[in-house]
Image (cartoon, rainbow, N blue to C red; front, side, top):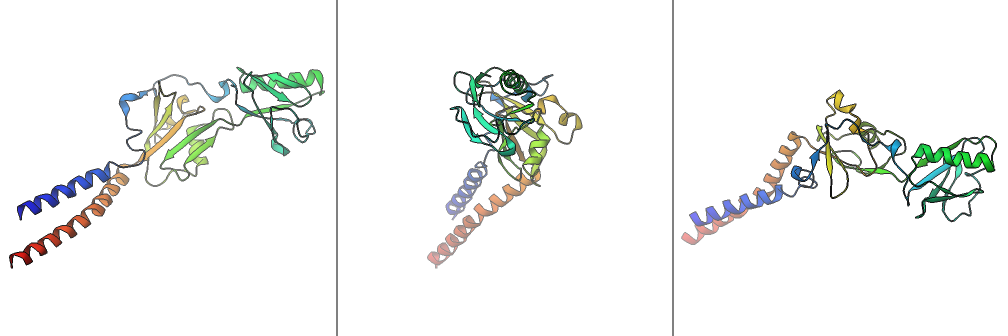
Length: 259
């Protein structure tokens, strides 16, 4: 009898611990030893200082004359189509150039968005247009939003100095399970990942320059303590119920055998 009791108790405990350790994302973003905290940095590389690279996708339109760059389909190999009022998109080739209508290829690798915009505008002014006003955006830049938000996934960075609060708003806001005091922004490559901790309850943290997002940032919003506790209780209840049923069945069988 003692053997049966001990067996079912030990089995139940093992099942509970194994189920609680299976939380999605939980262990992935809590390995603090592999990530250094950069929340004390004075400045960050923001989107307006991002340098254009091969395979980037540029959206270009002439605000002064919509018949150029936007509406006329381009036969240039670097163009990926698009059009209408949003402008057409053009991919930067491996040699760092982008092919544009009429003027041909323009070297843009290594330039910031603002620098590339001025260069394209200058080339069109010198050879085609009288007073062009060129708008250029880098449309493939994005951040990844995970955890307790209403819409997880990739969020495009469509403007300079996009903030953490703006991206969370774009995703529909936080869920009622979110821990708004411990939001992680994971930045950098695999060899040198860094994490910034943001506390939305602290106005100073909200205005921290480090919370201006960069291309490739991963934002993780964990559960608050109440939500974690409720999930653990639910897991315990889910696991312990069949264990108790087995235990009661064993007791009945044991009683019948003794008779």
